Image (cartoon, rainbow, N blue to C red; front, side, top):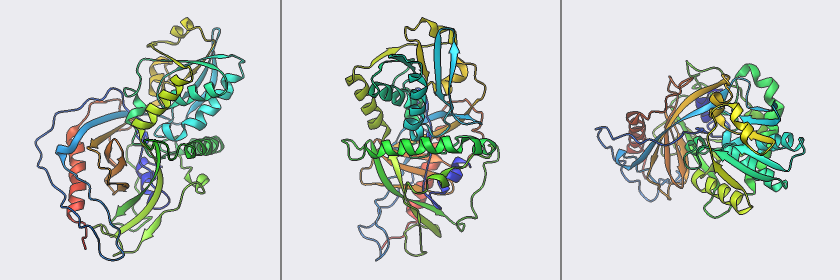
Length: 402
C-alpha cells in the first residue's frame, strides 16, 4: 500500500502520515525562499455553527516556513533486515531497512535484534548508528544489563531519523506486496511491542509521545479515491492485523464539519514529538552510563578495529554503502516546518497535502507526488513546499465559519 494510501486510511481506518513516517534526512539544508505571494488564511471565529467542530486556524503563510527538509526512507522489498552475520571474529546483528516505519517499529525491531545479540553471550555491545533504531537498540541492551557504546558518524539532530514526520505509521513502505505474507507475523510482533512501549511514555514532560485527532478530507466518496503512485511498487499492508490498538475513524456527516471538501473523517492516532523524544532517549542512554563515539565507517572491514565482539548495525539507509546492500532503495521525501502553533492540536490530510501538529513546528508534506522512488537526491525544493503551504492557506480561506 502506498504511503498516500496509508495516510488516506486515516480516513477509513486510522490516519497515518509518514517517516518516517518520513524516515528522515541527514543534515538539513534550507533553501532560499522563492518569490511567491503569501496567502493569509482568514481567522476563524471562536465558535462554529452548532454541531460543527471548532478548530484553531493554521497560519499557512510561506513566510512562516522555518525549514525545508529532505530524507531518503530505506525501503527493502523483503522488509527490514533483522538477522546475524559473521564477520571474522565479529557477530553483526543487522537492524535496518524499515522504510517509513522506523520510529513506529523501533522498539519491537530492536527487541528482536537484542535477542540475537544476547545469544552470543557477550556483556559488551557496540551499536552502529544513532537514529531511531540505534538508540532503541542501545537502551534495550542497557536495560538487559549490557555495557553499550554507540558508534555513529552523526548524532541527533543530524541523523536521518530526525526528519521523519512523526506519526504512528507501522506499515508505511515496510515491504512490497509480494513479500507481505512472509513478513506478517514478525511485523505484528514488532508493531505490538513498540505500541506497548509507547504507552508507557504518555504524559511525560515535553509530550514525547502524544495522541492526536485529525481530519481526512476528500471530494471523492470513501473507498473510491485511493490511487497508487504510478512509479512506486504496491506496498504490503498490515494495518488490519492491529486494528484493535487504535480507535477507528468516524465518518462525519455532510454539514457537520467546517471544511470545503464534501467528505471528511475524523481519526485518532499517535504522534511523536521527535525533537523532544530523541533528546529524551539520548539523555536516558547517557544517564545510564552509555558512551558515544563519533566515528565513520566506510567498509565492513573497519568494524574489526572495535573492541566489542558483537555489534548491532542500525545504520538505516547508510547500510547500502557500508555493507554494499543494494536491496535498500531510497524513497525521497520532503517536509516543510512552519513556526509552532500550540493551539493547533489536530492533524490534517487532503488528497494532496498533509499537516502534522508537532510541538517543534507544523510539518507540511505533499502527498501522491511521483519521482521519489529510487531517488537518493536530498536537495530541498522549496517551491514544492511553498506550494503545499499555499494549498493549506486556500483550504482555510474557504472553511465554513459560524
